[in-house]
Image (cartoon, rainbow, N blue to C red):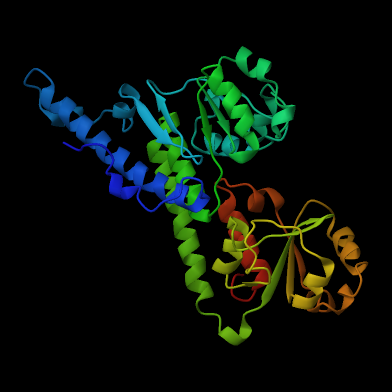
Length: 345
């Protein structure tokens, strides 16, 4: 019989460190999976009668999960326990809304935010407010009687504390890396009882990432280009390698000009971009391309940047790149094609 999670798995980790929290959650998830197997086997061993276990082969794949308590560790390192699978979900995050629908569990959603616009069915659900915590109506959430609220991490911490005070369970998801998105899909698969579908989606995302990495490995070093990803234009913000956007640029063989910065999407100066002279500039499709390029050309000295001189400014689909959901596969393909169209047609 498996005992408690070994203390050794937690030693050397700083719970305030985001990356350590991620590693701990993965260890914890594996331990929970092993415990679930033990519990299931024990239940079979203790069952009465002479019926052969083979007779139950046609039972739903998630039958054990529906009968037993579900315990998950979210991205804030919080253990969240459900005595039964949630039947009413409120999502405060567009990406979580997308994931729930992708899992085939959209009918469990009873409330979302004004920014939850994909798939189109999500726009017909009742709204609880915007994305930031101060725009969310706790009274509206209470009235929806949710079994769980899906939130993000640090941005929603005060809101999470208030919901917990009201005994409303909250699962906070704040992925930093591409594989974290896959892990979050698996986590929500457990919460919604859609383990099989979650495994399929996560496996497809990981397979696509491997495929892109393999193709990128064929690009000669002297053909690798430098890339600036403009997260926002005013103030000017960049994606670094401490984000899944920066990671996808690296997967595709690009060289992020701000790979050395520690923050995920820091504000940068016009002079810093000019000095690092990117050969390719990527930007999310939040406005018309001509408008975005014109704004860039109006910046002092930017006409000398190689990407602008050679017309290598490319827009990528905003939601597919910025939302940590299953469509990130398409976002990765769009980034790879924009940087190296000859290698990723």
